[in-house]
Length: 159
Image 1 (tube, rainbow, N blue to C red):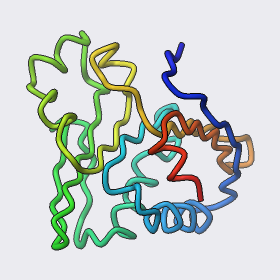
Image 2: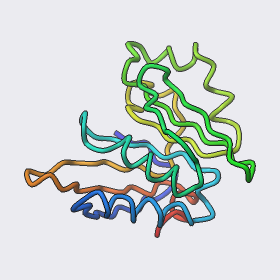
Image 3: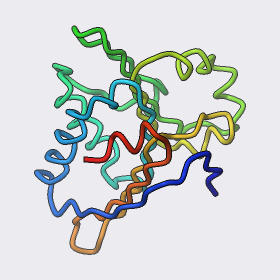
């Protein structure tokens, strides 16, 4: 259940293939609000959360291999432009208090892009996401994505 401080906008899009996922990531990457956004990615294992992040980071200019933060919990990136990006994966959290104990409060309070997989594992410790992407894999392998723009920053991310 979301506690919204802003009237959210809900939109559904389809990613019929990897090219569509990449195209959406590129479109999102050119939105000025991306530089200080919190984006939550939801979906089952294998839904395409990390694949989307890889496309988004490439579109933003991250060169080289983009690792999944499943075991490290967070993978940081610093672009030449000075943009800080953090990719989190809380899948392995057993207790939401692990978020607080890991010292992530300072990262989430600082400027930059935060991409979060398995946010529900951090419970109420996590700030409200600007944008939530809920990815569902259809029987044909295509993805249906529910977008929830929940803040002014989220609204500014609307492609």
